[in-house]
Amino acid sequence: LFTITRNEVYAALRQIARFSKQDSIAEKDMLLLKNETDELVLQHDYERIVRMAVDRLPAQQKRAYLLSNEDGLKRSEVAAIMQISPETVKSYLRDANRNIRAFCLSMIRFGLLISLSDAVFW
Image 1: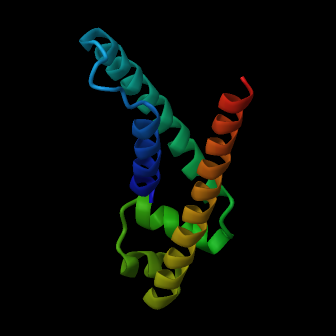
Image 2: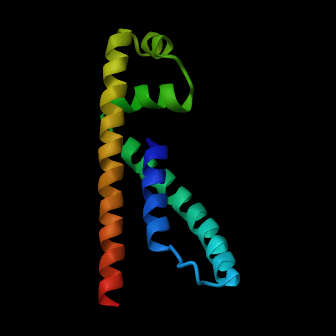
Image 3: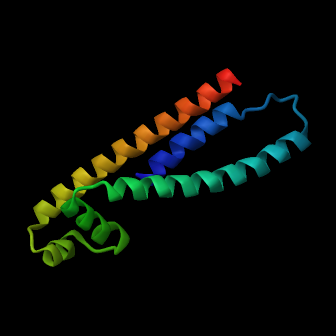
């Protein structure tokens, strides 16, 4: 989920930041340094967005997601801890991933719209 979001952002940044072949090497080096910094900032931002999405999940989905993804437990182990069936855990994880993905994509679109509106008006 995070990788999909990150790749979407990187693709958008690459598209915006393309230089023509006539640009000097120095400008390209500066862009690479800027992109590395931008990528670190984006990485932090998207980790924060994913955390916000996880915090908005219903309690059972959130617990299953955290046990599975952050604690690294298998579905059967999560089921034993939560005292539910593995199929219910599977359902919770599926729904949690859908909710997180939808939230992240909405935040990306909102962020890109803000970026584009800033570029148009300034």
